[in-house]
Each structure stands twice: as structure tokens, then as C-alpha cells.
Amino acid sequence: MDLSLDQRKHGDWVVVEVAGELDLYTAPNFRDSVLQAASNDSAPKVIVDFHRLGFIDSSGLGAIIACLKHLRERGGELTLAAPEDSGLRRLLELTGLDRVLTVHRSVDEISAD
Image (cartoon, rainbow, N blue to C red; front, side, top):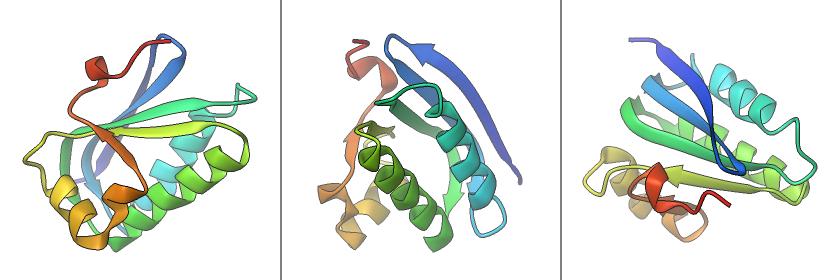
């Protein structure tokens, strides 16, 4: 399965919706899409919605961290939205990245301003 990336606005935030597999093959497209979503703001605020994520590997995690670093360097924010029982949440807990990344249950849980 490939990766599908869509963008929309949620107040001051840009939402990047991810569907499919985030792996070695698709991670560069993911990174480019998130960075493009952040390019129009001096302090970008990006939510990555992983509700339709089917699979993620270490390359995908690396791409998320690269995006986080880039946005923080510009004074921006990166927030993730993922279901409580998702594989992504378990992976973030196992790697300790749940202490570095902000993860919410849904995009609607994140204030639009």
C-alpha cells in the first residue's frame, strides 16, 4: 500500500492527513509534505493526523523527528493525532518518543487557535 497525504486547515493549524504506509519508500514524500505545509508561516503549526496510518517503520519515525526538529528551529509546533490503541502510540511509548512528541486522540481535541 502506498502513502496518501492530504492537507487542510484547522484554525491556525495546517493538518496533514496520512493514510497508508510510512516507511523507507514513502518517508521522503511525508517529510516534504509536512515541510511544505509549514512553509507559509514564520512560526508554523502543523498537526499530522495518523488515524488512517496502516504501518510505520523506523524510517517513518525518523521522518517525524526530522519534521519536529525543522519546525522547532523555526519557532513552530508539530502535534500528532492518533487513536489511543494505535500501533503508532505503542511504538512511540516503546521508543520513548512519547515524551518528545505531543500526541492527541484527535484533531478536534487540539485548539484551533
